[in-house]
Image (cartoon, rainbow, N blue to C red; front, side, top):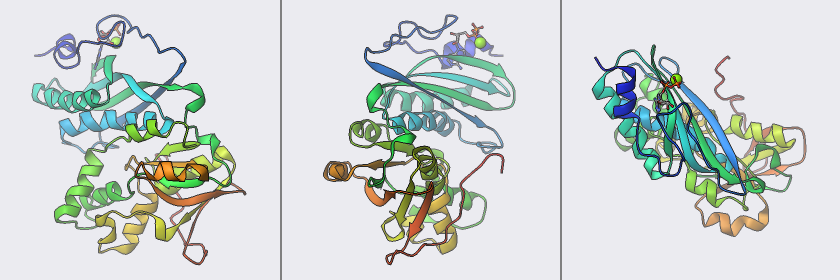
Length: 313
Ligand code: ADP
Ligand code: MG
């Protein structure tokens, strides 16, 4: 039977290059770059709540880290280090191997070092803390949107939620649509490069984890402004466009979580440079009570699902 320290040694210990001291002591030791603020975030995945029983271990390793790197991306921060706390029902070598493969593959791509954590027996739970760096004045905060800003979105929203609907039997996806949606749901790609490129261009940003309307709503609240989105301009992935259930597709587009795209605001003067980054302009920030409205081509309000995913609703 593999013990706790054997698990850590075999699966979670890699040489740390940028940390002064990595896994193995009472704490890790970090030397932050001069002039940068540390960006620190943590996210938890629980079996039964965020994790399907029997979920693919390699994808879990990827996703648990990806959702944290996405938060760093949404601040414009460069990922540097991560801590991994994990509760496991048993020491399953194959599972651990696959999990750490998924974790380290993504970590390597974004220059993130695993520097510590905690390992214990229990119902499957994974909590990762990610630490990044960003020049303090350039951080993409939620409270910095201003009336007159454009609203932009990277990629497109809705595929992850549509994939989840498929797994729950609410819709039946096939072929490439199914593949794209399940990939999105299980192996999201954090927009780290884009987040970094938006330093000095965007004023505020947030990643879409709970749904486009809900997450942009957080920006509107924090910045004390309203956001108006143009229904026709919202980018739609093929699976969303071709979905047989149009109401479900619209719900996923506006309120589906787990896509991990970035929605951000920027002054009009930055349009040309942001277009070059591949984002889509989907609306504008206006003065007024904090709200997010979706408008049709004639400026009429499109009825929308009000809220995204709330763990306590
Ligand atoms: P302590 O008792 O001081 O908390 P532990 O015995 O829990 O130390 O852990 C030993 C070392 O292994 C520490 O450096 C800790 O950060 C690291 N560690 C434990 N679990 C993990 C994990 N899942 N991933 C990475 N490092 C881990
Ligand atoms: Mg410990």
